[in-house]
Length: 325
Image 1 (tube, one colour):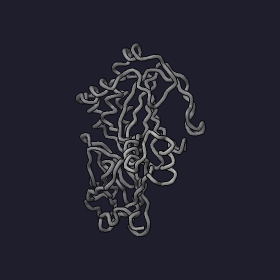
Image 2 (cartoon, one colour; image 1 turned 60 degrees about the vertical axis):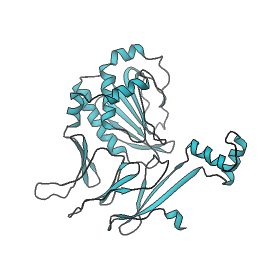
Image 3 (cartoon, helix red, strand yellow; image 1 turned 90 degrees about the horizontal axis):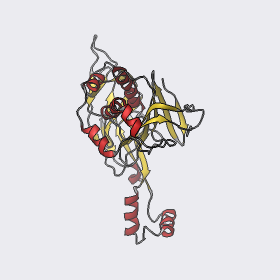
Image 4 (tube, helix red, strand yellow; image 1 turned 90 degrees about the vertical axis):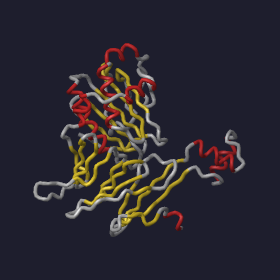
């Protein structure tokens, strides 16, 4: 079950199973939600395996800096920070596990490790965490980063390996997505007899965007495949997008025939902006001059790029449309 809404200009999704709720807020046009749906279903299977009965709330929040942070807390006390018509107010629950994942590309397997740790160490975490405060996505209660690193670097347990091998699939456009041996498999809907070919297998998925019969699959923040689910599917080429500083989601639109515009935008990181100010002879610590430079366009604070992809030749034919203007 899921619903979509707008809150603070970000899409909000809720994926809900028997005793687990996953909230997703991830940029204006991101399509990471299919991955979150798969993660929620697998998380419930892990919860069932570990026989945990309390409520679990998982908050997936996008990071535009490329950083990844995990936090765990026991007990939930949160006023609804979003539009009340989008996310219902959740009653206080001092027994609930609340996990926050702040990331530009969350890993299902690594996130399952955090969930498993929270369940198996539930009693100890509840005793050792700090005083419960109103929830913030950047809170880091109950465990520190060194412990997080230890959890993530450990081998996956039998319970997690069994969960990842579960025969679970979701629909992506005209195709199906499922996990097999820890890999993301994209299966065609066009069968040959009783066989439905696997079009692509990936170690990880960054973003998925279905546009008509074509599905764009990003396996990192700068590389993608375009899959064709026609009667004669082809092997997709691996494309590289030349970019800097961008860790958000791509917007993709058909612009006629089989041409697609792939667009992204973002703010410059503070370190890059400060360096540009210095190069322009402006002291970054002088807020007045820095703001004036921003307003008069002396130093850019925002960047965008549009590239054109040709499906017929399976190639990027224009690297940056802005440079042609």
